[in-house]
Length: 599
Ligand SMILES: Nc1nc2c(ncn2[C@@H]2O[C@H](COP(=O)(O)OP(=O)(O)OP(=O)(O)O)[C@@H](O)[C@H]2O)c(=O)[nH]1
Image (tube, rainbow, N blue to C red; front, top):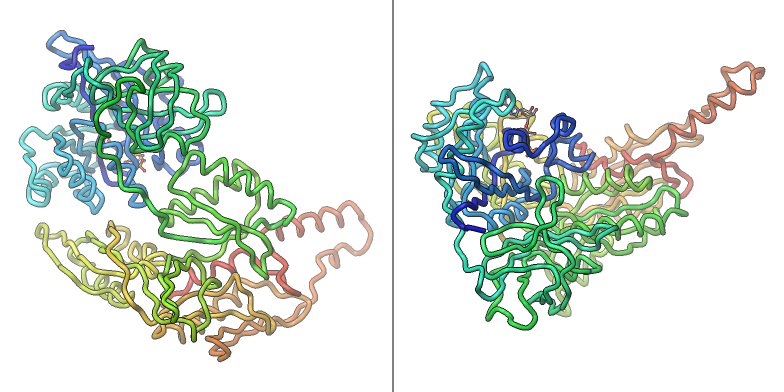
C-alpha cells in the first residue's frame, strides 16, 4: 500500500457535539454503509450505548474515498469516546493517528472536554482542524465559536468547515480536508515489525481480536508474532480491517490500521499498549505504550438473590474480558451476604457496568454507594489501600488517612461563576485559577477531593448552571485528611454495607441528612424501623419509619382468587430490588441515599 494514499484520523469533541453523527455521515458518504445500517449510529455498537448515545469502545473503520485529485485514498477513522471517564481511551486512539477533526457544536462553543481532548491531540503532534457542527440550529453562531477556538485553543480557524452532520452539510469538504491537511503516515513496510495494540477484545468465535496501528514492517497471515510486553508467541490466523464489516486483507503494512487475530485466548495476553513484532526478527525496542489505568471509584455489587452469586461472578468475568479498566474481587458483607467490590474509572463507567449486568446478564443487584480509594497508614507503618469503609482499621490503629485529590476545570458562562465557586468551596475545594476565556466564558480551576465528586458534584454542577457547565478532571495526588467512618444502624444493628467514610467536619450534618433521606426511601413495615447514624459508638442522628400493617389483598373482599394472586404477584414484583437486612427490608434506594443528600 502506497503510504501517501493513507490518512489516519480521529474525531475529537465534547460529549453530544455530534461526533457519532458525523462519523456516520462519513461512512455513508464513502459508501461504507447500507441503507439499513444508516438508520442506526453504526459506530455505537452496543445497545446500551445507543440508548445513552455514548461511545465507549474505541473502533477503527476503514473508508475508501475517491478525492477530487482523482486518486483513491484509504481513510482510517478511529473513533474516540467523549466522556471524562474514558479519556484514557481517547489518548489511546489518538496515538494511532496523524490528525484529528475537532468537532465543536456551533451553538454551544468550546467545552471542558473539547479542550482536554484537543490538548491530548496537540501533545501527540497531530494535525488538528476544526469543524463547526450543528450550523443548522437557529442558535448556531459559528463565527463566534471560531473566535472562541482561536482565543482559547489557539488554532487557526480560517479554513474551519461549517457543517451539519444532521443534514449532511459540509461532508464533502471534510473528506477533502482530511486528504489535504492530514499528513500521510511514515514508516517502512520492509522494516522490523512494530505494531501498537490500541484496543483488544474477546470474541466468542474468533478469540481475542486486536486492533493495531503498524508503525514499521508488515504483518500477514501465517507470521509468527511476539507480543513484546507479555512475551507471548502466536501464529497469525487472519489480518484485516473493518469497513465497517470485517474484511480479510493480505497484510497490514507500516502506516495501516486494522485487526489481527492470532489464536490468543484471553485479553490479558494482548494488552492494550503492547507492541507486536515478529518472533524471529524482532524489533529492537517496543513502542511507547500507555499509562496503566487504575480504577478510581469503587462500589459493592451484591446479588439480590444470594443464589445468583455464581451467575454474577460469571457475568463480571465476561465483562472484564472486554474492559480492562474494570476490576472486581469477592467481598463479604454481614448485611448483604456474598458479593463483589468492583472498581470503575468513574461514575458513568460504574452505571454502565451495572446496567449491562442487569440487562445483558439478567442479574439483579443491590449496589452500595460509590467510594474512592483511601490511603491509610497504620501505627505499625503499613500502608493500606482502603476501598470501602469496612476495610478501615480501628481508629486507634490509624496513623493517617490520605484521600485522592483531582484538578478539576469547569467551563461555565459568566452568570454562573458565583454559584460554581460556592459549590466548589462547599465541596472542600481549593481555588487555583479563574480565567476569562472570552467575554462570556469562564474557566474555573479547583483542586477538589475526589470523594466529593463521586457523590453528587456533577448533578449539582449541572443544576446550578442550568446545564451549561462542563467538567473535566485529572488525578492530582493523595492528601492527608481528617476522615471518619460513619455507621448506619437499623434497629440497633450496624449495616456494614451502609457505612461511609466522610470528612470529620461534615460528619454531623451528613449523618443527620442521611437518616432523614433514608427514612423517605424505606417503606413502612410491620414494625417500627429506627435509623441511626453513628461515629464510633456515638449516635449523632436518628429517624424513625412508623409501623404499618399493609395487606394489599384486603381490598379484594375475599372472593376472587385470581385477582388476589395477581395483586400478590404485583406486590412481589414491586419488591424486586429489596434486600432483607436483619428483620428489615431495605430497597436499593436506601443504599444510595447518600447520593441524594442536598447540602
Ligand atoms: N441540529 C443538529 N443536531 C445534531 C447535529 N449533529 C448531531 N446532532 C444531534 O446531537 C446529539 C448528539 O450527537 P452525537 O453524534 O450522539 O454526539 P457525540 O458527540 O457522538 O456524543 P457521544 O457519542 O455521546 O460522545 C444527537 O441528538 C444528534 O442527533 C447537527 O448537525 N445538527
